Image 1 (spheres, helix red, strand yellow):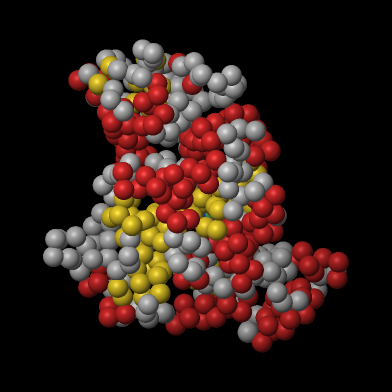
Image 2 (image 1 turned 90 degrees about the vertical axis):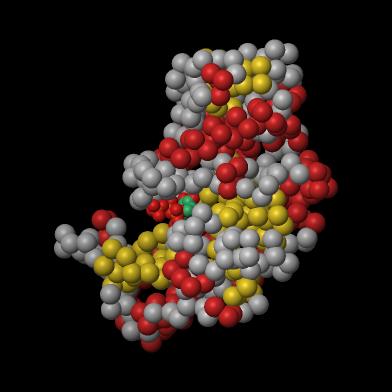
Length: 488
Ligand code: UTP
């Protein structure tokens, strides 16, 4: 890592002398704080990426691209051929070797929700929030495997306090507070259209969130690696706050990751169409990586196999597994590239009352893939595992995600042998993860028929657990649904 003097020298040599002057005008005791957004980052890499973005980067040539090898789990998540992988993953969970990281630092601009995205009400019947859904999934796994699962949540400067308050007022949704840690992501400087670091009226460096790829550095800064290490965790299940269908700490995925000795594994789903604005996992010049949709030549996006499927269809889901050693390596290597794009900088970055067009730099978590030894790619069912809440309406909207959740719960009931009457099939439906995270839990409840003409919800208070553990508390508003009672 560069020293303060080296950073000043680099800034001066790269046309950013105005920042050096501004720093030198500060009292010496304030200089370290002043330089926070330029210290401890790969500043040279950032300035190089900025220069490259200004020049416009070339797209990879179609001939350099190939499809990745994928483990195919698309058709049946409970496929018997993955029994062994499931057993391996379950053993990892039972030995307490798995920790979770959720990234929730984004600004959620497209959704237009005023609070942190994780507080968004997504439960089709209960309106339980995304955070509650994930917290209950982790709670259920802790009970099933008799081990605590440390859970790190990355927040952003704008939503950290509100996120912390949400967990406190909701009693951590039944989780023990010492198994949950919130930590903040970092910021990087913003640049004006001429490539100069923007200073605000007070002469401070105008920072912007460093992207979900900031998670490695933020984990190191907040001692999350040390905490995971002390708890015995060796692997991290990484997920993003906007996908309510995510199978949290999926044992099959973790098992495949461990069996292949992968430093990083990633889940992909089939792209909806050639023009869907989503990054794809591909091999470029022999290296596995995610290519953003803007980088892919359209002639390549349109390519199809003989069975009509898109050739480059492995869409990135933002669900990964990592070995903790590898995450630490990425954090210390400072090799994650910056993606620099021209954007209208957010309202808080107005200068003289006018919004500014400038360059924003972000790091992406998936850029760790090319650094990983034995990376694995697991192709899963989109319908079952991926329905991100990105926009207030249309594609990737909350409405779509709620419908996907209902369909998932119906399918869980069907495959665990529960008969749904015609009336019941048309109802919104929800199963709290503390009642059942999957079909395996549901079968144990020995339900037989479901014949309810009203919203259906299976929550912790409609069942008696066989264990003596305390039921989780919740303050989610319930919409007076018909309660299902167990026939057991
Ligand atoms: P998105 O790329 O969808 O961004 O984030 P967003 O900020 O949530 O939404 P828009 O683009 O402003 O509409 C994907 C995941 O990465 C996290 C988000 O919280 C989400 O879980 N993220 C994104 C961060 O944690 N930090 C960031 O700087 C950006």
